[in-house]
Length: 430
Image (cartoon, one colour):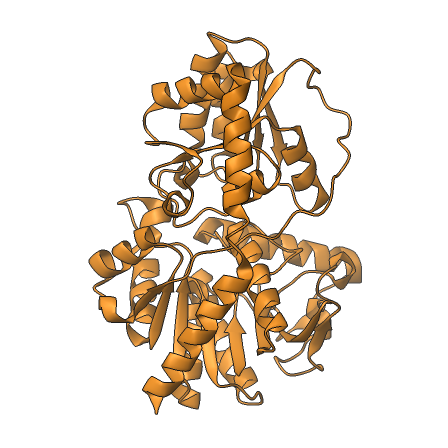
């Protein structure tokens, strides 16, 4: 089986759960012997790469200007990069800022940008770039051998649809998040239309949970017959990273929020619950690890609530730093307003950290030994935080049973399910 996979990000260049999911699934498929050509947009300097050797913008004049890129640990996977500023969780404004930052980096490295004329012509908006990326993907795919196309989330759907039209190969779209998850009822109509188009032209739609499957069917009008649920897995944690210097005292408990600081993740509910906890317990620090469009507002909110000295903001973490923060935590809280799945709670349990998760999350479908709350119920979130911190037997029970439970959620199973869907799509296309 040969798969052309269209993704936005791949470790170490990750903005959230999508990169983690792409890596876990790709690695498991590789171990099954599935051959994957992973197409990745990038403008990142190669010296920052660890998992993947990427190219600088100036080195890539066309989508097929270099040999495929091999990854040290993946035998059956090659990476093809298309020079593009696309990345997950962009908005029109952040897209323009990313272009400006990229051009500034190139000026600093090369002294001028004229030599890259034709390579960095990003005069249009984000949606024009999505279409430009799709056109380049078709050119790249014309020189690749593959049986099926697997596209992750909305920015790659136009590329997937275009490649499917040109090649006649079946298309699977993988829905990790929908516009309703990211924006609530105030959806971006252009993004919604792209998502809907991708789901309808696809031969199969993969949802990360039944929560997401229901949204796909009810909000996008997709037939339930072609929507399959494939739960995410988690990488087993094999390392014990040392904890560095912090401003946290030895006798203080640590409650962790790890994720993008955006409306979808519920950071305001986390802070309001923190306020209520601190009214009854003083020896607690609340750590918010992540970045996002509500970062500054979250800092201001902590100050307004009078708990600024009890809330630490780390910014975006990756790699070893994520492991370190889990090792420090006594409890992980995910108060997401709408979470299609949620890999972070699995990672927390894998690091022996008990979790509180919102009922409005896909991961709540697969975890039994986790405390579950409605995201809006700040009083109940606070009560559960206090219960875990004050009563050690409860934390021990959640850790031991939760850790055992999460061991059953493996990327190997997700990959096997995807491989079965590939086969079904191929049979249906005959």
